[in-house]
Image (cartoon, rainbow, N blue to C red; front, side, top):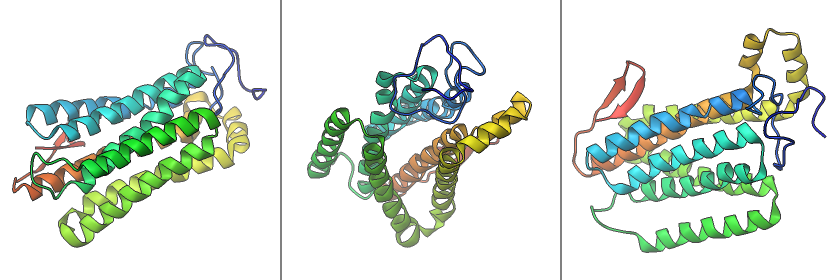
Length: 260
């Protein structure tokens, strides 16, 4: 049964195996979790810009795939939080696995010559994605998905730390910023889950706009979206350095980093 603070809306009763702390249909009749939905823009727009820039610069297709996979996560998450339907939940969660597999491939292939393909690693990651998808579709256990996703993230973090400590130490700022932002998001994700009842009670006493600041799952989107984008930037920076290019970071509108 939905919590008392939740309302009925356009998409009907939730069918997803997960519901988050944001009150359902509190802002819009057409969007189940408004703040959790619109916060996905950070997964959609900046990676699209990155994909366009990657294509224009003629960089390797795997980095184009990395940006587009991040966009796919954002679109899937938008649909999930807008509807709270199980099918849309899968559009959110499964692309998280697939995108991380692309990130792993990019990061572990940074120091290979151009136009080479690591078929064993490719096969391993495709198999991992396939097995996780099949098991999750049958098991329908969110904890399983979270563990499988966390495993991939851990692999990415370990490789990133190796690169910034021993290969290109001048990239530590970018690497540590990416990791710190992501961990901040993970921390707020846990706060949102553990203290949901208290957060909801607190929001009842606040004006809606002020209460929106306590939507920590939305902050998880913003911070992990930024952290993931910065990770792709780190991976791409590492790759271009290995290929003897001279990349530089430019800030669009003075705030958003892109690689040129």
